Amino acid sequence: MIENRNVAISPKDFGADTPIGPQETFVKGVYSLVDEAIACELDRLRREEGIVPSCQPGCCHCCRYHILTNSAEAHTLAQYIRREFSAEQLNDLRLRTLQWHAWDNSRPGRHPASTMVVAGDLSLYEHSCPLDVNGVCCVYPVRPVVCRAHFVSSPPRFCFTANDPESAEDAPQVLNSVVEAVSPFSLVIREQIEATGQDFSRSQMLLPQWLAIEMGWDFPISA
Image (cartoon, rainbow, N blue to C red; front, side, top):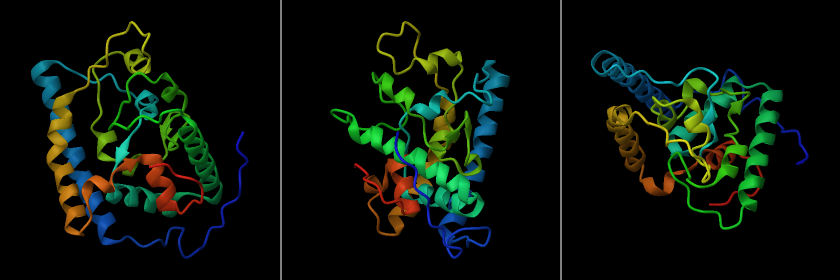
């Protein structure tokens, strides 16, 4: 068990008065367009193809995949945490993130990360995203585009066993048309990041890695 340590919280950096900067405003605006595009595509799938996603509240199997995000979305997420979380919630989140990193840093081989699923590693399922609290995303309003656009039409158990090399279940049936519907907005975020002079590929890391960096937590982070 990893020992919890209290986090010193500065009133200047945390709380309801945390300012909303231009980047956060931009990303939140993109999220509104993303959600609208997703709603339209889900409605089209239902009307024209009779396809309805099986994803329901409390189903969080995809939160246990490795999730890649970028600097702009990570900053927006961290600002939401600073503004909305209590000191106790921050301490709990820091401990979950620390535990995730301790596990990730200890894995032999440490294979490259993918955008959502790292195939063939059942151990991933034992270590959910630190933002998953009892099956609920604690930053749901500012979850990244990759999370917003992930829908499946297959039974939830397919997602549960997606990383199990011995599973006899079929692969999850991802609604790729939803991902395609939001791809232009992902490109807009990339262009905004590159407009600041950043290399977009270098701005992408696993969500828990960005979380630790953005929150200024002082524990080892493996690239």
